Length: 81
Image (tube, rainbow, N blue to C red; front, side, top):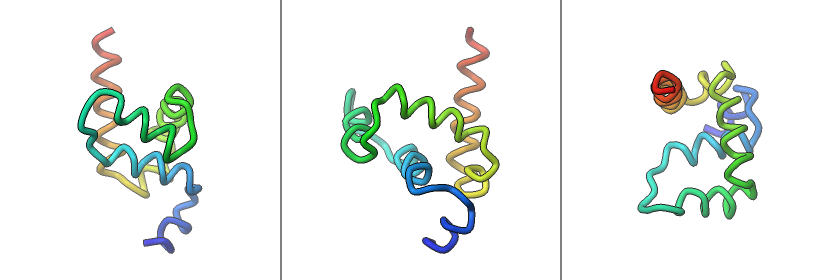
């Protein structure tokens, strides 16, 4: 899998963001803690990077299930506004 990750052009940080999004979190604050501890990012910066990743074809090629799920969530939230 490491070879595929290198071939898709995503950096380690971008792959880390997608990996974190694949996980479930037990309660409030757990995801934010993981963002800070595992990725060394503020939650605000994390979500900025995640949003940009959702529009990146490399991310879609790397993890189509997660990217498409998050795109659907994003579009549903935009529709609520």
